[in-house]
Image (cartoon, rainbow, N blue to C red; front, side, top):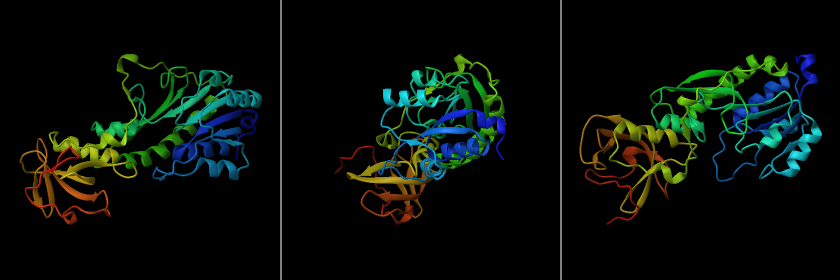
Length: 312
């Protein structure tokens, strides 16, 4: 049951993906008056693995908008709604400070990392790529500079050695919901002051592009393993080339052995040498074929995989 005093607090919510959907549900369950929900149109080119914010909001009869950008019209609408609070959960656009300032009790964001580390974009993918053993979620005040506001709460999320970025995202969803639930009362009463971030520890990361999945076989087997699990499904994937043909590597594991980087040392199971060690390719896919087991990709011992599309 929602708390009656919470019904007196009006919020505008910016949300997307499963964290956005479940945190919006948490606000509604607490009795917060959600005046409007801003979300995104789904990208047809993106593998949709997450639950829908729009579906939940429309089912609840809420006002829903999905603008290409947040401009004067959106600012005017939010000003007219007179929110006490603004929340952002996995929203992908920068919210202008002119909108943040419209909420007298503050604007709050959930970020998918343990701030001040991993500010910026694609923070889960970067954490897996960098071989981190833990990450987390942070609830913080929103200020003009992205991800730099005072920290209200955090929860650690472990990263296991073979976790993919998708695995870590799935762990973050309930962690974010728990964190919001335990902090919501202080936010709604205006007492969630939080603590300043430790600026010397801050790190920043930018967005990742599909072409960043190119495998450099000169790197260690561990580094390539991290790349594969950071960008495997539902992301664009790690890839290499053989004779100009593109090969996606969807799952791999470091194993023993050595050879020149990129050389196939075994075809069944499929193993490829890295700069330090060897990778066993568990699953892969030629660009014009179906995904399959590594030993069914047809590569023979001695074949050399490269980071270049052009080949003999």
